[in-house]
Amino acid sequence: MLGCYSAARFKLRAGSPGARGTDVIAICENREAWDEAARRSFYPFVAYRYGWLEAWAAANRDLTPLFVASMGEGGRCDYVCPLYLDSKARVISGAVGVTPGFISADVPPEEVLSFLVGEARHQRLKKIVLQIPPGYSYCNNLMRGGFVLRRKVSFYVLHLEGIGSFSEYLDAVPNKGKRCDIKLALRSGLAAWRGGYAPDSFGRFAPFLVEMARRHGAELPEEDLYRTLADHYGRDLLIWIAACNGADVGSALTLASGDRLWIMWLQGGARHRHLKVDTFLYAEIIRYAIENGFRSVNFGTSPIDTPLGDFKRRLGAQPEFHEQYELDLALPGVVKQCGSRVKGYLRSRWGTL
Image (cartoon, rainbow, N blue to C red):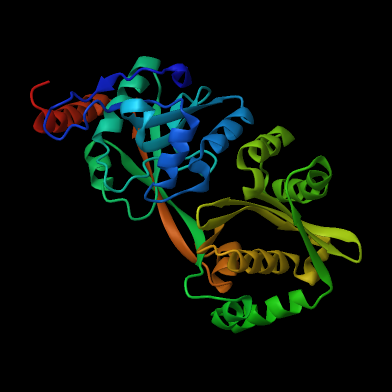
């Protein structure tokens, strides 16, 4: 599998115009170097981290994580492109487990595309799928290389700059009805508990995750995913439990990355909707984020103009759109077209190939 590759199949020649010395596009095996590059990335997504990619792949038997990076001297990573190889679908994808692809705004994609197309042809894969974060400035390069924009994925983000307290946040909530809902939820007798992963805390969290999965017809990852994430994230992973009169009525899981707090899962029990458990959990997580100096809270993905998307917007979150591009390698001439464009670009920068 590609995850076993440690040598680059494309190398920039030292001393050539525009080259980065001995930098190569390769599979990075240095966890610390990868995570440091991810922290410096244009859009520091929590799922860029080495531990997340390993854990998500371990929970999905058909996936192999691909730690594609620009590697410099001493194992340094200049930028990273987190991907997976899906051996069942025969696809290289950056749209698995909410993991986008290219994440450096100032790095043209042709270098990585050359590497990925070469590996995809070598492995006889069907597609390359890249999910691009907002503000990325090289999407036209992808389309000229044969990629097609398939869909946009909306992440709802609550920005906390200039908000110094939870009461200031409440005053800033744009929807008057939602402000009332938050206040009612906080006065409804609910109590919040939070802590790290442990078998007992996971046992309280899991029933509501199962309920959410059944509601949406989704498959649940094994508990090993959360155990592995806890090993990698440590205190950055928190399990949240909402309780009423000694009974658990909802749960959530958050991950911290830099100055962003990410709500990965959140679910109130269907039998306790009258308690506004979802609103209570969001409010307590927002309170925690403000008190601990986070600059934003990511509420996760929801389609535009859906009840859940509207719910998040009423809490003050705004959508940030990630674009999903796809290169279908089964289409006649696509690989040839993409390869010729990439080769022309490389020739213009580094001379005759």
